[in-house]
Structures are given as C-alpha cells and as structure tokens.
Length: 235
Ligand SMILES: Nc1ncnc2c1ncn2[C@@H]1O[C@H](COP(=O)(O)OP(=O)(O)OP(=O)(O)O)[C@@H](O)[C@H]1O
Ligand SMILES: [Mg+2]
Image 1 (cartoon, rainbow, N blue to C red):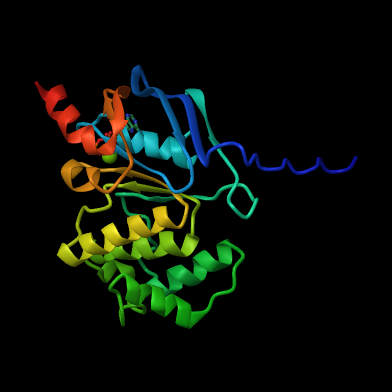
Image 2 (tube, rainbow, N blue to C red):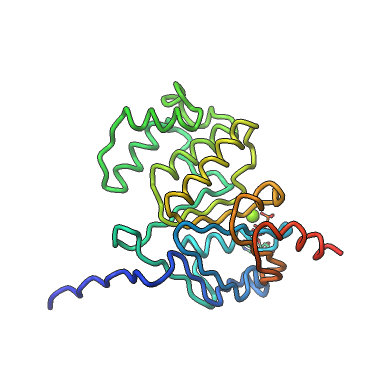
C-alpha cells in the first residue's frame, strides 16, 4: 500500500485558529470554550488574573497539551508548508549542563538545519549574550536564561510565536529588546500571542485583546481597550 498523499496546508485558514478550545484538570476547567482566529502579521494580548488560564491556553495553542474539548488548527506559512509554532515559556526549558551555543547547535540538528557558528554567535549577541556562549547555562542568571530562550525562539523562526510573560526577569534593555522583537515578528508576517500581566505596556503594542476569567473569554476587543476592560472587570 502506498503512503497517503501529504495533506496540502490550507492557505485560506488563518495561521492560528482555536474553536471552543477547552482543557479540564480534574474537575476544574482551566480553559473553557476559547475561540481565536489570528492571521499572519496580527497580534493578540492575553490577560487575566493568576490562574485565569493563560499558560494553559498557550500550551493548547502550541500543541503541547491535548484539549479536553474543542480544536486548534494551524494554517499554512507563506512558503506553503504547515505553519511552525514556537513558545517562549515562563518555566525553565534549557539543558542546564550545556552552553548557549550548544543549545543552538542541538536545536539546528533537531530542525534539520545546518549549524553555522558565526550565525549562532550573532544571534547570541543580538539578545545580549555576547561572549557567554560556552559556559553551562546553569550559571546564567534568570534574565540571561530568558534571553537564551528568546534566541532559541528566533532561531526556530516560527510562523506562530507564543510568549508567556515575556517581560518577566528582564532588565530595561531586555524589555526594549523584547518590544523590538515582538514588533519585528509582526512586521515579518508572523502571528504573535503574548500573555502578560504588564497589560498597559503591551496593550499599545498589539492588535487584539482577550481577557480570560476562570478559563472563559470574559472580554474580546482591541488590545488598546484591554486596560479599561480589566479595570471594569475588577469593579
Ligand atoms: N497540570 C495541571 N494540573 C492541575 N491543574 C492545573 C495544571 N496546570 C494548570 N492548572 C490549573 O489551571 C488553572 C489555570 O492555570 P494557568 O497556569 O493556565 O493560569 P495563568 O493564567 O497562566 O496564571 P498566572 O498568571 O499565574 O501565570 C489554575 O487553576 C491552575 O491551578
Ligand atoms: Mg501563567
């Protein structure tokens, strides 16, 4: 029997679609009935209290967690292949005994790409880790580990880029770096989702906003209007 023909990615589908996406842990719904449609070059801010379901939703969107109900689909990249999705998480995601350059080398291998040392060094310099590529990552400060996570995300070059608390642990330069990266990804036609408690800072930089409350969509609108919606929800 011949192998099934590969399914052509659907160019009509936005890069990221979630329909009724839901996840239950035990008898608690962490995410309940969330709908998202995000085209390339568009961005979404996720807000909500601690425990509102932001991280769980990002994991569902990244395909790292299986939904209890609902679906998540990825469209086609501009190159016509299925969209690639990347997540900058807020938990440790590095091999602590390896150096930063080793990470980029292993990632390149896993992605089936050629590893070019000079490019890897340039990428580390871009995130402020110039000259720190060889020591074990366990010696990195929290902000440096975050910067390495950013370098690895950029190296992956995802069509759908998901960020969980991207500003946490970063200093002032790091915040500016992150602002620049988010703007650049959107300008390059990526679909970008950011979960953040720095709502006022992020709201003016992104397109759409979604307020989660106990896993449910409490409010949807323009990101710029999210701070007011959040204040209203607190009353
Ligand atoms: N693996 C898990 N097992 C059981 N419950 C979980 C698990 N992961 C998340 N939860 C629960 O799901 C709910 C949503 O958690 P989540 O981490 O998605 O919230 P969050 O909006 O990211 O919060 P924060 O602002 O604190 O990062 C919480 O009630 C949490 O306890
Ligand atoms: Mg979270």
